[in-house]
Image (cartoon, rainbow, N blue to C red; front, side):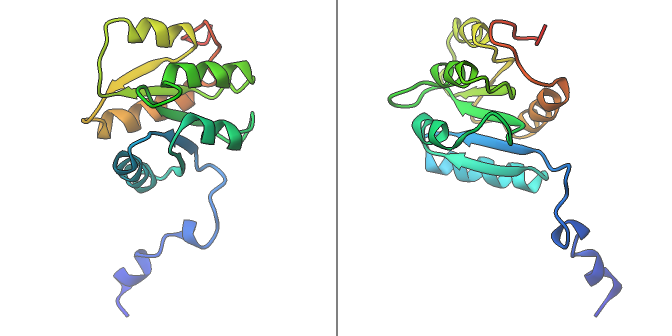
Length: 149
Protein backbone atom coordinates (compact mmCIF):
# COMPACT_ATOMS: atom_id res chain seq x y z
CA UNK A 1 0.00 0.00 0.00
CA UNK A 2 1.29 3.44 -0.95
CA UNK A 3 1.07 6.50 1.26
CA UNK A 4 -1.16 8.05 -1.39
CA UNK A 5 -3.70 5.23 -0.81
CA UNK A 6 -4.23 6.54 2.71
CA UNK A 7 -5.06 9.94 1.31
CA UNK A 8 -7.80 8.54 -0.92
CA UNK A 9 -10.04 7.76 2.06
CA UNK A 10 -11.27 11.07 3.46
CA UNK A 11 -11.89 11.34 7.20
CA UNK A 12 -15.48 12.34 6.44
CA UNK A 13 -16.18 8.78 5.28
CA UNK A 14 -15.27 7.51 8.76
CA UNK A 15 -17.20 10.15 10.67
CA UNK A 16 -20.00 12.25 9.15
CA UNK A 17 -19.29 15.97 9.03
CA UNK A 18 -21.73 18.04 11.11
CA UNK A 19 -21.16 21.04 8.84
CA UNK A 20 -22.15 19.40 5.55
CA UNK A 21 -24.96 21.46 4.02
CA UNK A 22 -28.11 19.71 2.81
CA UNK A 23 -29.57 20.71 -0.55
CA UNK A 24 -32.95 19.54 -1.87
CA UNK A 25 -33.21 19.50 -5.67
CA UNK A 26 -36.54 19.38 -7.53
CA UNK A 27 -36.71 18.78 -11.29
CA UNK A 28 -39.02 16.67 -13.43
CA UNK A 29 -36.14 15.65 -15.73
CA UNK A 30 -34.40 12.55 -14.31
CA UNK A 31 -31.23 13.32 -16.28
CA UNK A 32 -30.99 16.81 -14.80
CA UNK A 33 -31.65 15.43 -11.30
CA UNK A 34 -28.85 12.90 -11.67
CA UNK A 35 -26.43 15.49 -13.03
CA UNK A 36 -27.19 17.99 -10.28
CA UNK A 37 -26.92 15.30 -7.60
CA UNK A 38 -23.49 14.31 -8.94
CA UNK A 39 -22.31 17.92 -9.20
CA UNK A 40 -23.43 18.88 -5.70
CA UNK A 41 -22.30 15.69 -3.95
CA UNK A 42 -18.91 16.05 -5.64
CA UNK A 43 -18.76 19.54 -4.19
CA UNK A 44 -19.46 18.24 -0.68
CA UNK A 45 -23.20 18.73 -0.22
CA UNK A 46 -25.71 16.20 1.11
CA UNK A 47 -28.34 16.00 -1.63
CA UNK A 48 -31.94 14.76 -1.77
CA UNK A 49 -33.73 14.78 -5.10
CA UNK A 50 -37.42 14.98 -5.96
CA UNK A 51 -39.16 14.50 -9.31
CA UNK A 52 -41.92 17.01 -8.56
CA UNK A 53 -43.18 19.58 -6.10
CA UNK A 54 -45.73 17.28 -4.46
CA UNK A 55 -43.01 14.75 -3.59
CA UNK A 56 -40.95 17.50 -1.97
CA UNK A 57 -43.90 18.88 -0.02
CA UNK A 58 -44.69 15.39 1.30
CA UNK A 59 -41.11 14.94 2.55
CA UNK A 60 -39.97 18.35 3.74
CA UNK A 61 -40.04 19.79 7.25
CA UNK A 62 -39.18 23.31 8.46
CA UNK A 63 -35.69 22.17 9.49
CA UNK A 64 -33.06 19.90 7.99
CA UNK A 65 -32.55 21.59 4.65
CA UNK A 66 -30.08 24.40 4.01
CA UNK A 67 -31.05 25.31 0.44
CA UNK A 68 -33.53 24.34 -2.28
CA UNK A 69 -32.72 24.17 -5.99
CA UNK A 70 -36.04 24.12 -7.85
CA UNK A 71 -36.78 23.89 -11.56
CA UNK A 72 -39.22 26.52 -12.78
CA UNK A 73 -41.09 24.61 -15.48
CA UNK A 74 -42.62 21.41 -14.11
CA UNK A 75 -46.05 19.83 -14.63
CA UNK A 76 -48.80 20.46 -12.06
CA UNK A 77 -46.83 23.01 -10.01
CA UNK A 78 -44.15 25.38 -11.25
CA UNK A 79 -41.10 26.33 -9.23
CA UNK A 80 -42.46 29.69 -8.11
CA UNK A 81 -45.66 28.08 -6.82
CA UNK A 82 -43.57 25.49 -4.99
CA UNK A 83 -41.37 28.17 -3.42
CA UNK A 84 -44.51 30.02 -2.31
CA UNK A 85 -45.92 26.85 -0.71
CA UNK A 86 -42.64 26.34 1.15
CA UNK A 87 -42.86 29.88 2.53
CA UNK A 88 -46.51 29.33 3.51
CA UNK A 89 -45.28 26.39 5.62
CA UNK A 90 -42.72 28.64 7.34
CA UNK A 91 -39.83 26.93 5.58
CA UNK A 92 -37.31 29.70 5.17
CA UNK A 93 -34.28 27.98 3.63
CA UNK A 94 -33.11 29.87 0.55
CA UNK A 95 -34.48 28.87 -2.85
CA UNK A 96 -32.55 28.99 -6.11
CA UNK A 97 -34.77 28.73 -9.17
CA UNK A 98 -33.33 27.13 -12.31
CA UNK A 99 -34.89 27.37 -15.73
CA UNK A 100 -34.28 26.55 -19.34
CA UNK A 101 -37.10 28.92 -20.32
CA UNK A 102 -36.08 32.49 -19.55
CA UNK A 103 -38.93 34.93 -19.20
CA UNK A 104 -38.63 38.64 -18.53
CA UNK A 105 -41.09 38.41 -15.63
CA UNK A 106 -39.70 35.31 -13.96
CA UNK A 107 -37.18 37.16 -11.78
CA UNK A 108 -39.81 39.58 -10.44
CA UNK A 109 -42.29 36.77 -9.80
CA UNK A 110 -39.60 34.74 -8.06
CA UNK A 111 -38.51 37.69 -5.91
CA UNK A 112 -42.11 38.22 -4.78
CA UNK A 113 -42.02 34.83 -3.02
CA UNK A 114 -38.53 35.28 -1.58
CA UNK A 115 -36.45 33.58 -4.29
CA UNK A 116 -33.11 35.36 -4.44
CA UNK A 117 -31.54 33.79 -7.51
CA UNK A 118 -32.74 32.61 -10.92
CA UNK A 119 -30.18 30.67 -12.96
CA UNK A 120 -30.38 29.50 -16.57
CA UNK A 121 -29.90 25.88 -17.59
CA UNK A 122 -27.93 24.15 -18.90
CA UNK A 123 -24.73 25.98 -17.91
CA UNK A 124 -25.18 25.82 -14.15
CA UNK A 125 -22.12 24.11 -12.72
CA UNK A 126 -19.86 26.73 -11.13
CA UNK A 127 -22.51 29.41 -10.81
CA UNK A 128 -24.93 27.04 -9.08
CA UNK A 129 -22.42 25.89 -6.48
CA UNK A 130 -21.39 29.51 -5.80
CA UNK A 131 -25.02 30.62 -5.49
CA UNK A 132 -25.86 27.76 -3.11
CA UNK A 133 -22.90 28.56 -0.87
CA UNK A 134 -23.74 32.26 -0.95
CA UNK A 135 -27.44 31.68 -0.24
CA UNK A 136 -26.65 29.45 2.73
CA UNK A 137 -24.23 32.02 4.07
CA UNK A 138 -26.82 34.81 3.66
CA UNK A 139 -29.31 32.79 5.69
CA UNK A 140 -33.06 32.24 5.50
CA UNK A 141 -35.25 34.00 3.00
CA UNK A 142 -38.30 35.97 3.97
CA UNK A 143 -41.29 35.84 1.61
CA UNK A 144 -41.75 39.17 -0.05
CA UNK A 145 -38.26 40.22 1.04
CA UNK A 146 -35.87 38.67 -1.48
CA UNK A 147 -32.78 39.99 0.28
CA UNK A 148 -33.92 38.75 3.67
CA UNK A 149 -34.47 42.28 4.99
